[in-house]
Length: 149
Image (cartoon, rainbow, N blue to C red; front, side, top):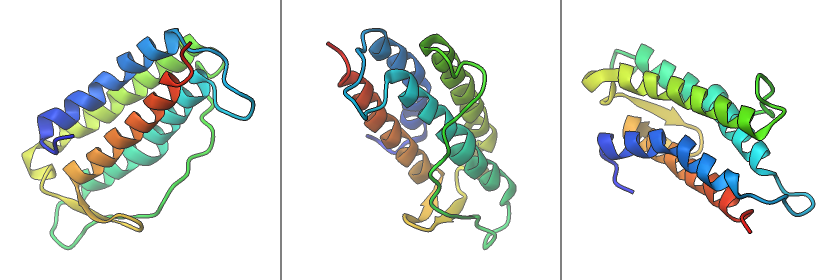
């Protein structure tokens, strides 16, 4: 995947509709595996608890040397509107991804030059952070695709 701003944003924006297409034909998972709904709720939780706060911290870090520091976060299961159905989980993913995209768009050119320090990945600029997000999406979209008959 290319690390340019447009490609990253486009990939992130496309994820909810790709998830909807894949989830429409998903079967029940093998015992112990996540259903398509559970995968979608995980993606919602990660947007809300990981990516949005990190993007917010980058928006606030306007001075050099004021880089935010991020710990590894494994979000809890997301619970909220839509957590009881596949359609609800898709709606929640669409809504939270739109909120994530709003934060990305709000950074502007100056914001894209900012960095944060991740406990595992080290120093990341916005493109690097979003590349990890896009890669995480791909991992879980593949998980949903594996549930298709």
